[in-house]
Image (cartoon, rainbow, N blue to C red):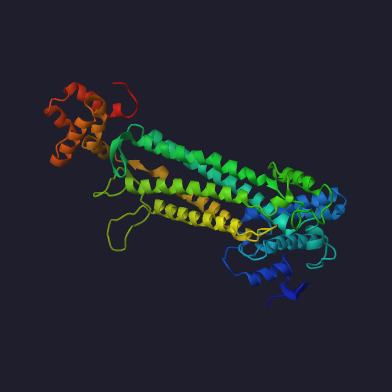
Length: 466
């Protein structure tokens, strides 16, 4: 039978597993919030963010004479161990809870306190020697420590997302170089347009995703403004004079991020604007990524009754009934990830709007939605790059054949024979099945030499003079 220790809080006594570093308030959260099944322990950067905040707070309290040296060093040591990856299994709170994050803040406070107690040679739960509230949470409230920890977590997670994005941009760019001489038809509204190269198409994918690197970084930069020292509602009650600015300075030194104290702590405490704009950046990325995956599925459609301009790496048999069928499963799964991101962005919007007065109590679902988006996108970007993009090959002859037989190349004749004559030729080609090339010669509209020059696909890939 599992051993327990008894701990007490406002509501009375409760059994806590004897070997657990968390305490009574974390245990109540475990019992109360069986919601998403996604626990804080699954988000290591968030846990590190909590440890960064608690270490910065302890350092500030020590420097302001509120915390003795030995306790400060022990708290700082415990936080460093958590940042290094230890004790993450001691954060079992569901990511979605009521209480505006109190359960997660207290989870961190209790774990750190019990690590310190162990270092002091005391038993877990002997909080008179190191209290989750009086020492680890000194000069803080959930309402400043929790959102600051979210922001520190998101700053770290954004770094990982941008790294994945940079890698897939280079993968698309490499394909652009590889396919630079593969002539194909461009399409608008799923209809033949004008020629281009497959390389230009893939380079465009690289360019559009590359734009989002700066967008993500710029929007994430808003997270460096924090409300530590605001305590409950921004008035700074129970925090000493100078705490807010000093704590921000210490947090910047600990994390390496340019953290600053918000100019108006009453405004900053309920404000969720930075989350909204960052979430919108993840949605923007997902929209672009999903569009690219739609293109990849279309371009690889077939092999006999589709476009079949490219081949995606075959990853698994595609049907339980149709022999030989291989589906574009990697773009498909990335599409689905993007749909999830769209929904989570809407969740962020509703959660941000739902704050009342001096606090937004919906930050748990808001932070979870953004962190889930980042994790999903990181996994999707790696999967798309490793299992799809790097292995794409071109069907060069099919691409070229489509250009040669396309009615769309009549567009190139516009500057030479006029729109009306070009339209007549295009219509006749469509109705008769004859080629644009043959019709122009039959009608004596242009000489063969001039026509060959104009309709050389390579001459239609960039601007040129008549």
